[in-house]
Figure 1 (cartoon, rainbow, N blue to C red):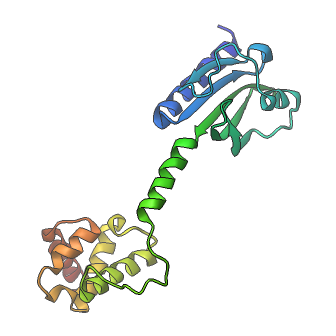
Figure 2: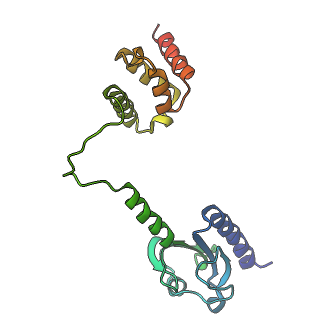
Length: 213
């Protein structure tokens, strides 16, 4: 096996792994830049309709012609032959001499994702600010509790469920000091927000008290 064959074999492993992770909306193509007329050696999740043995794209030819061409061009607008919009990334691979010998190209089909986004926008659309109807589906006390937990988490630059054990103890002690744990059902509500059980709420609180003692 030649060095180039070995190199392409390893590139194909990377392409297969990326394609499997991002299937079915992502096509991954391996190009042999030493053979521009038959550059494509592998296509995973074939969305473009091309085939192994097809020639290099304009970008591939430009990369072969210019040793100063960027190694990575990420997230550029592209399109399949049938007009479907894509987001593409091209990664050039060099040999030890610095010559481009292969490329891995990733093409993400945006058409399906954009249609989903359109559905979600419609589903979540609400009336303009001129709407006079105002309603809260949680009590004022619950809203205050949520706000305190979210504010604390934001200061830690985390989602409430991603707080560390020490941060949970600190949060729960703060809520206890504010009297939030004195009302019925508070431990269950707090646990649901930060992703722990009711018993764990009291466990963390007990640990914080022991720490202060």
